[in-house]
Amino acid sequence: MAKPCYRSLVLIKRADREVEHFLLDVLPEDFDRLEDIAGEAPLTFTRWALMQIPLSPLPTE
Image (cartoon, rainbow, N blue to C red):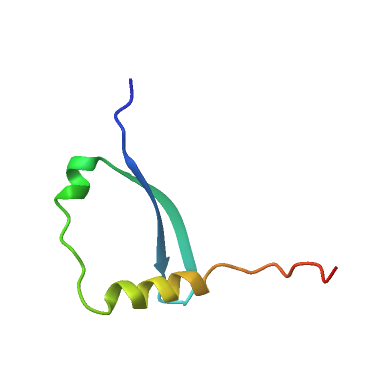
């Protein structure tokens, strides 16, 4: 049986300004050992990541 894991979408901005993305699975015990990110960094990154998602306009009806 497979171990439970956290699945994350990783976004990378390359030097040529293109954005690549891939999935990354992390075991809970490895995730718990990661350091917290403090200050404005999480908000800044979240805003940047959301801007990378293409929007599809909804029909006007």
